[in-house]
Length: 115
Length: 111
Image 1 (cartoon, chains in turn green, cyan):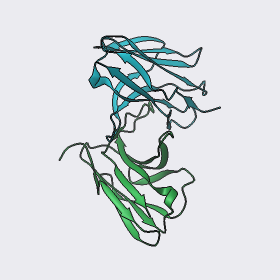
Image 2 (cartoon, chains in turn cyan, red):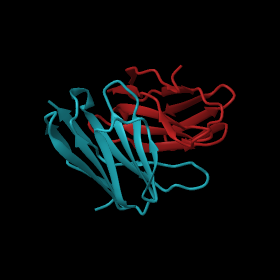
Image 3 (cartoon, one colour):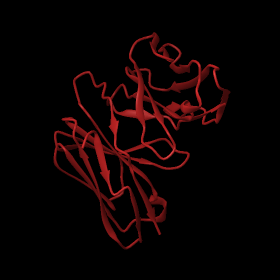
Image 4 (cartoon, chains in turn cyan, orange):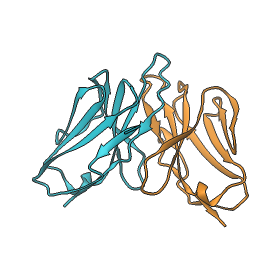
């Protein structure tokens, strides 16, 4: 496996379900991100982890719960979602350095549909 | 005012023409600028980065940056149907270093 892999690629869930999205990066990067991409809207940053520590929570509702057990794995736990949460969820990684010029490598995304 | 603004398009150009994609940003402290390409149903992939004023060329792609005007553009020469995609402009925040994306411009290259 190379790059950034996300599973599942597609997920359909009811509003009362609990599910998780998984992301794994094989690039040796030290930062990982969750983005939400909805139709006709810019990519929205949700969470950032640097060296396994959460450094950004962009006012995301608590029904989204991230977990970063190590610098290669990132999860997004989903609970009691709403239909408006249906979107493409993208995981990305980067090598965070002092210049701040982080180049992101994205995974293929998990397409979530909430019924 | 949006932090990073792009015309959503679609921008339609004939095969072989030059496609010009534009992006403006609001944060004068921004230092790093990126263009990502996203094919339908796929994830964004980096195609160009630029950090200083002027032009940067890579094959058929040229990125142009004008920090005084807070403007960054991407030119695609000899456009091909395979260039049809959504192009996302991304700019780092001067304060946080966070990457802010525009909504993207859809490019259609017609044979």
